[in-house]
Each structure stands twice: as structure tokens, then as C-alpha cells.
Image (tube, rainbow, N blue to C red; front, side, top):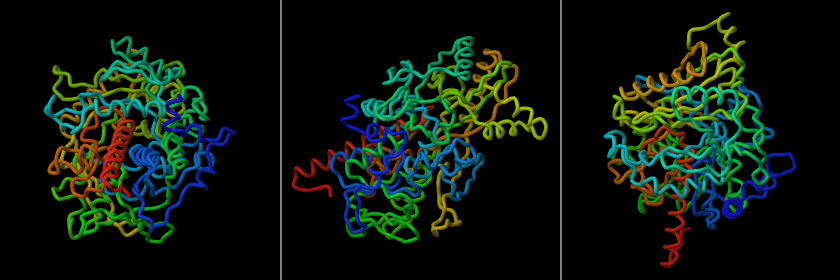
Length: 552
């Protein structure tokens, strides 16, 4: 813990008086003028942007983070109410299309400092080594220009800083976690029982939810509202795990600042800062370098909206790569009814999981695989699950009154990267006068096969545990891709260090750079990629300083 505090003191900067926000730290944070040429301006303060800010602030960089949403206060802004938490999502207009259009605005997007990790379930598995070479190994997807070994030390650091709790992990690169696994609730007990009866290995964790006190952060109290914003600060999100330390080291967070374009100097070929709107006033923050971390819809949209004479089709889009290869994960959920009460909401939602089906099985007709975890839909989401089966009126009320008897499992299926699954600009404009994102998505046959295979395994587990009825709903979760990392500019937007090929002082440090998505929740990998990029940026600046230059 001493080593963690030496590189990230966020948990100790939170108050220990029963409140959950260090308002003094926010009130007294360093503030830059728009005319100050800061070392780096970061667009978006979610998983990638916040990690980058914190790392570079510690290196003495003058950094500013802009976020379109609020600077959340857990005491004032988060409630133990499902309907009352919809303001955590990005609900600005978007256009969806394709043969399998993906609904937007809830489990796959966030708005405000902390990003979508504010309302994620807290599940933080690593990607597997195989995820970084799916084309070489399986003939699908794409190879990353970095390997698992390149990310391993950053995985380890971030797991300690969140921190992550869980059993020793046997899959991928076997490893342990900083904190012991949480106690298992009714939903987890059913998964473990059904998995054992089915010959499937399942483990408790990994979740970025403190199992015991961590610094001034309290332990989890199992209140069941992880997806609505953890009001006790036990669940990790950048708002409480990296932002306080960034502020303490001189970073500025500018909330409610909608970035509308990236400044560009046609003569030098360099980014010059960002255009943004705050309090209805158009402004421009000057910067020596720009990092975009708006996630897989808004990052491509910002690049496309930053067209210029040099980039008539959008910034960094010389080879029509911006917005392409955007991926979601197939996330079917299968629920089973039991005579005994389960009360699946009384625990971290992803408390037990299995990655036994993660890798390509040569005996199966599809490539790659899926993972399975407990999920715990609250009543509104459960009503959507039941209504999707066609139950209405009295039948729906019956299912809802039976809520405490149901257990629910969810899968994450690795859908493949396809060039036609992409973000473009729509004719419709938002309240700022900017073209909104148009997101087209269609599944391939491999995607469909994975969904059905995952459903079959989940049904088997629940039946083996004693369920007398099972129902499944098809869903989608998470977003990655859209500005992917590649070996050259004809196949991607950024290089192995997250620097854009086209603009040498423009970086992208969010989930949009991931070439593949595995069957794992992406938050931990996004943070690890951003931490690695920060290290490369700092090292490059140090090298330049030794040569008589500066990064600012």
C-alpha cells in the first residue's frame, strides 16, 4: 500500500469525515487561462483521460482536462434509485442503423468526470495474451502493434490503485489480485453451484470494489446500486481513484466544457489546442499537445468534425480509418427462477465469473469465445428483460412480484472487428450546431453463433443449479474501436504509443484505440493503455529536454 500511495494518493486525499468529496481540493485546483499554452489538453475525463492526466501531472506537466459533463459530487448527485440515475448517461442525440442497430445511452456510454466507469459494474478482468494476436492465431480480427507483455506492468499497477478484489485467476496470464474476494451472495452461490455441476470452473471476482478500507475509502456495503454510481466510494472510478491525485499535482479539470473541434496549424501540421463551449461561450484552449479520450463514439465524431484544408474528410482520416472497426460485445442475459429467494441485487453485480470459454475452441464452428459473469438487474431493467419475452399486464406483474426468486447470468461475446461497423457524421445536428454521430452496426455469422453458444451454456448452468424456468434477452455492452491502434496509417489511426499517424502532437487514449475487445470488460485495459501512453509521452519529453528542447 505504501508503494501505491507513492504513485497515486487519491484514496488518501478523500475525506474521512463521512462525506465523499474533497471540495477543498477542487476549489483550490490550479487554473489555467485559455491563452496559456499548456503542455497537454485532454478531451474527456473517463478511464483513459483521467489516467493520462494523473500520470502526467505527477511528471510536472501543465495539464487541463475538459469534460462535457459535470464534476460529480457523490453526496449530492448520486441516488439509490434506478430511474433517478439516468443523468449519468450520455443522452445527446445519435443516429443508429445497420442490420443490428445498437441502442445507445445507458450501459455503453457515460457523461461527466469519471466517464462510464461511474456507472459500470466494477468488473475489471485483464485481456488475455491471445487477444493481442487474433489475426495471427485465429485468422480473425486484427493483431495489435503491442503485446500483452507490454501492458502487464500497467495492469498490475492499475489493479493496485483501484484496487481489485478477487480469487487467484487461472485464465489468460494466471495472476492474483491485491485484495481478497468479496463474500458471495445468492446469485453467486447459484452460479458456483451450477458451474460445479456442469464441470465448469468459476471464480469470485475480479471487481474494482474495495473489500475492506483502502486509504480513506470505505469498504463495500453491498447496497446493490453499483450501476447507479457508488454512493459510498467503495467502487473504483477515475472520479475517486485518479482525479484527486491529478488535482493535487497541479492538473485542472474543466467540467461542463463541450469540445467542438481540434485546432490545427496548416503550416506546421501540428494541433494547437481545442475549441470548446462552456456556459454558452465559444472558447479556445491553447496547448502544445492534444489528447482525445472521448470514447468510441465521440472520439471519431470529434475527429470527423475537425475537418480542415489539410484534412477535408476529417482529422487523421487520410486513409478512411476514422470511425471504422467499431465493436460492441454481445451481452445476452439468461435468468433462472428458483423456489428459494435469491435476492440477486445483494452483492457486487459481477461477483462470480468464468473465462473457460474465452479462447478459440477448434472443435467449435466459430472463432474466439465468451465469458460469463453474474449480473444483477434492478427492477426497471428486470422489467425490460421480462417484457422482451412478450409478457405484459397481469403476467408482467406476476414476474415482477417474483423478482427476489430470480438469478441472472450475463455473457460477454467477442464480436469481430468489421470495417463497415463505423461512425460517420449524420445530417442531424446537436444543440451546439455540430453534426451528431451516426453509428451503423451489423453482426456477422460468427457473432451470432457466439451469442447462441453463450446462451446455451448459461441455460445449462442455471438448470444444473435447479432453475425451473429460464429466459434470455439479447443485449449489447461496451464499445471499443473507431480510431484503432495499428502498425501503419493505412490500417489504423494511432501508433503503438497512441500517437496519431497524421498529427505528431495529437494522441488518442481511450477505448477507441483497441484493435480487438476480447471477452473482457474493457475498463482496466483502457486505463493500462493510457498509463503506458503517459509513460511514453513523459519519456519522450525527457529525451527532448536532454536535447535542449521542452515539451511545453
